[in-house]
Image 1 (cartoon, one colour):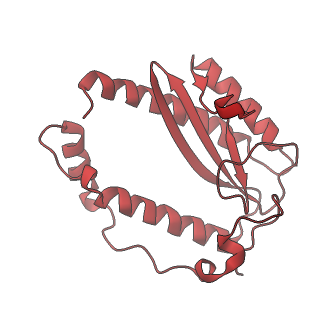
Image 2 (cartoon, one colour):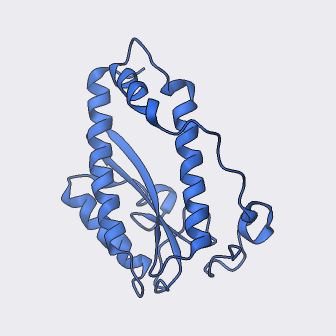
Image 3 (cartoon, rainbow, N blue to C red):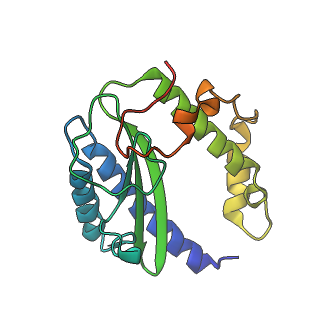
Length: 188
């Protein structure tokens, strides 16, 4: 259980992490490289007097993880330009005031491909469903933030996760490809 002071530190780190993630997301576009997104994230992190947690973690060479299309997570930014229809997940971790914040979001490059939008929407829905139904999200007399969150989430969807998309049963969507950077193989 965190003390009030520790919760303040975690929240402050998360606010900075969100600002850094938003800066990285604004950089996404056709022709932009993940190296450029890494530069933007690094500069935004430093501008907030924070440190990019991934940098030099077990010799990781970048300040952010960017996972494009078939790369599931922890992709290393490189110099390949993003293309129309790509999807890119930006995973930001910052360290500030003794606390780490770790956030990620998936962004669409150029024109959105409907199958990618549907798959991403379903994943987000399931994530929020799991957060809202996890025991740590239930009201607690010791944590006023949980009590508030529980009351405010009562209008959130309470239905189960949507049925798996056709992608869930297709190998190209659920494997890590030997070809690291390729277009998303989502059913049309």
